[in-house]
Length: 427
Image 1 (tube, rainbow, N blue to C red):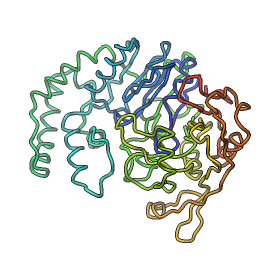
Image 2: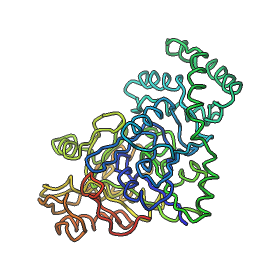
Image 3: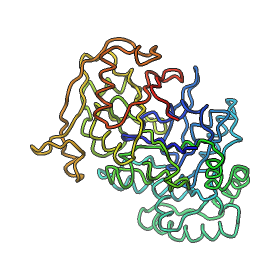
Image 4: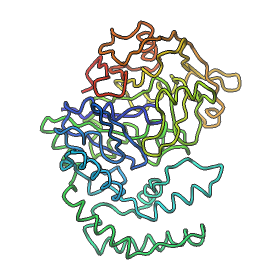
């Protein structure tokens, strides 16, 4: 049976939680494969809204096994705050599995993230300050602390000694900040160890056995394609690989087991943090999209930067991820527009580009080339089939499908669980 990968096809915040929740009753495992608590998914069930940061969206589906896989970096304090919040609301979180190989965000990671970002000044990247980047840096430099290390006091102490010898030098001598003490950190994380122990598993083995048994595994990315460390708008990116290739490394599932890649697109474009954004609107229309779409970060609360749909970005996401199906979200936000602009290419110093320019310099200077489509006035939040949409809304969807290079298989017309038009099965 298949493994299905879900990826953001823009700069994140596309509505991946809604997409995962849609298929929750038809899959057996939902796996978070990268990122940390620097991202958020919002899921609306009835009149209840759930904001998830570390936990996979499948935690809200009672028949799904939610998995935090090896590619995720975990802040245990945040994890248990999130679990306790769901438990208080009657959500059963006992099914959760956590990879023993996942890396841990430590207090020195958070401290370094915040102070280094401040010192960058105008060159800041726009991180959330939650320690994700420094944790991945330690992982790559082979100085990280993993979940399994908490179960051996000697190993944990030794790793903390080595880390603090280095990090305290940087904090005190470079940034003139107070160093951190070992014993309080050791005590805190040994306390987390006993709380985490019931959830920890060899998740790669669990997932591959599940596939062998004919079960369906849904791999849920956070952030988006244009924030990928390799394929995004570097250096204004995240520290992991939200693309479909990252799903294999981050979960321990081989690429031949993935049969479908679902890309999530908004009917317009947003991003949070610094970096190039060709269709960004700095006028009343940007504020209109922000207000109509409630474009504020789930994790940070920051205003999202807003702009019109960017077709070259969608085509790029199709190519980089091998997208087989798109889920178009927030189509309802565009209701009321007389004309809807869509970026179909860029002008860079007088030269037309139909794809994303090769260099960051050219992309930074890209000026959108727009085509305009007829809008619609109807409230579409009550639509329950594609045919219920106004003709102009249908034409807009079909145009985006052609421009993006993959079929649009589902359409979001509102935040609710029942406000999705599924044209083709996403499972």
